[in-house]
Length: 317
Image (cartoon, rainbow, N blue to C red):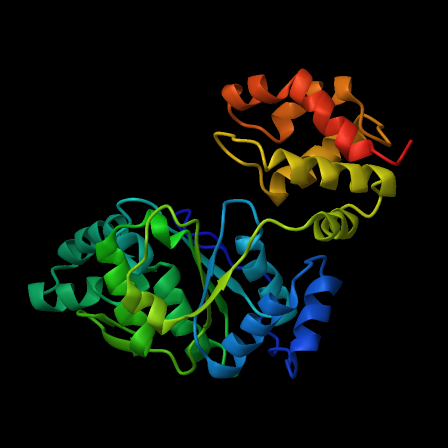
């Protein structure tokens, strides 16, 4: 379900899966094509066991958002996603009134000659409330007893500090007050994952409320595993060479360093071109799959890409 472009819910709450160990978390993630380090599996296990939000920081494209999607699938519950942006306010994050529906109702009430006080009570009822992601998450356990959704607050660093302060208050008690209706409190707090690309520093108060984990760019071996898990049809030689190439590319001074998402896009593009290994002419022709700024493409194509290809394919001839 999507509301105002800010929330996404998938799956069906049919009873949360039981998570009993860190190994189970790691193996379950891998079984869903998400290759997680043991440190991340530990952080997720503790977030579930302690009922604390987990703050995931790291560069864009390293798989932070994908953690939440995979955890929702693992727990067999719904994912409720709040995408943060500059200027995000309560109306778009928590709730707002359906003004068009209210105006229509007012006209109907006027036509019926209803009293003003009664009319006001009519138009400020739950049926006129548009529930945004945070209110959906708070109400979820009241509507689905025994189930907890995964609430993803994505890219919190893009939101204003005022919204961060509101979020801190919400995380302390998981209740929301709608003046016209009353206070709505979660029977059980949702599983909360917060991501940040660290474009700005978050307040210490928010960090203290959360467990913390940094997701870095993967090692060559891990990235090869990721390609194998996400693109099982990829030739092993190609997966290995792509992983080596990306590792070396991230050492270059680029305007925007590519993440794992770009690695998978590039591997898919090479497979679409029926490539089983890296060749410089193909690399130069497909740099747009991994580099999104012309300055970076210009810097890498030609001589530098030849060096990177040579390093990536060394020993595979």
